[in-house]
Image 1 (tube, rainbow, N blue to C red):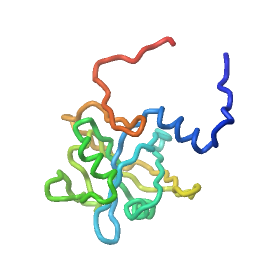
Image 2: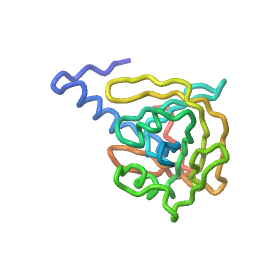
Image 3: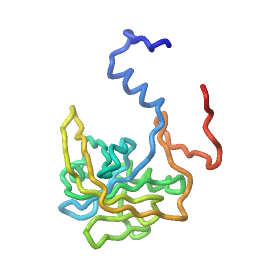
Image 4: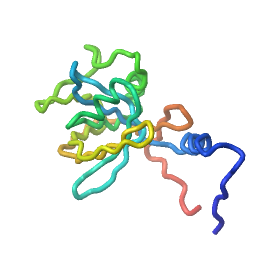
Length: 175
């Protein structure tokens, strides 16, 4: 088996960014309650960490929403589908209005904002925060899971663009 060799001609940071631009990631919208109400952002860094107890992890960088989510005790991680592309773009744009009357959302009895159309919604308790460079890595224990039976194909982020995966088309195997 051959192993990839380091490419010394570019700084590691640039190569790191290039590597992850080529690596597709699922798209999520993370919401919480900040001092002035509901906050949210689009993330592609959500990962499953453990099943027992169910735990996920993600990172946030700078910005008002990110700082409020990093400080929140509870959050909702929405795994969005292709039919939520406009919603993902809205929450990715720091200047876009969020939680408007035209969006399908509500406040849960526990206080967190819930986007009703998400394919999956995971209400979580943040159990660990670790500052890393200009980001904060958060680990969160899943307290409740909601699913939307009318959900669509997954939405993924690849090479700085949103894409969808076709349902029913198997991945190539054995290579």
